[in-house]
Amino acid sequence: MISEFKAGDKIEQPCLVRLQKIGTSSNGKAYAKGLLEDNSGCVPFICFEAGPINRLKTIDVPRPFVIGGNVDVNKFATDMSLQVIVQKADVPGPKDSIDNLLPKANIDLEDYKKQFDALMAKIKDPGLSKLVKQILSGETYEQMLINPAGMRLHHAYIGGLLQHTVNVSKLALAMAHAIGEVDEDLILAGTLLHDVGKLQEISPELGFPYTTPGRLMGHISIGAMQVDETGRQIKELSKERLDALLHVILSHHGEQEKGSPVACSTKEAFIVHYADEADAIMNQYQNMKDKSWEYNKMMQRYLYKG
Image (cartoon, rainbow, N blue to C red; front, side, top):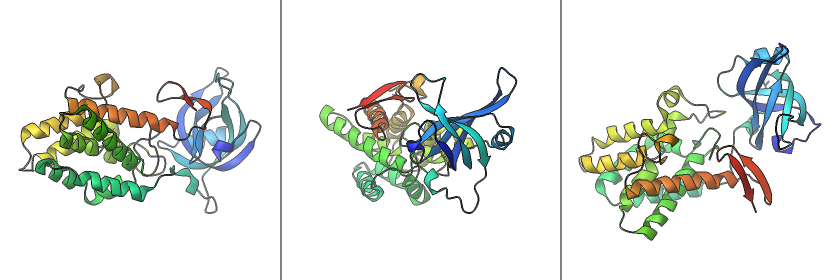
């Protein structure tokens, strides 16, 4: 398991390879670098061997390989973190299990499914209720139960999108109750649908690669177009109501600098945004060890778990 690697270890095991760069060093020697992952964690790698480099440079999405090499301290890092010097990269054979390469979390998915269903049932507005239930049904509903919420940054594991959606909905409702004078149906519909575009943006396959539509348009645009197309067909949903919901979805990253097409303008949009952001941040502590500092790439700072 990657989480158990120590400097000086010699390893040979299946890993998910996420290639980041093929290049040439200052002495003219080719190299490849990226990340090795399993469901216990990830570690950077670098490779200077021609055979493995030739095999790795053919991949355009994360792929499983049997990786052999040495674990060492990364001399370019300032925190004594580890890296693997890869000497071997072979395609897994029939006897090489890759079951541990798909990230999972210690969460009760059946309980989250029940909470998700209960949240959908709480929407009283006929038009919004019909819209949410129509979109989150059939294959979309089944995919919502297993998809990750991210490729790597947050809730990047089986069922991560379901957990994130439920958590954001509960946080947003709690804020709505505390603040008052807000449209709770609009908030609830917004939280349940805010990341629905990720079902088309991120594949649930090994490595959670981005899809072509995901790279071309991104989950916010994809989700908003889906909601707009479906909403226009629902007679119980006025254009004004649909526009208000679309604003919540389009602005849920808060600012244009953070990827939202528009910035938050309504109370409901702000509530959904801050609930979404809070849950993504809290998820960063999930795999941290107690009483430890750890540099977090999403937050770009050291986090402490006491």
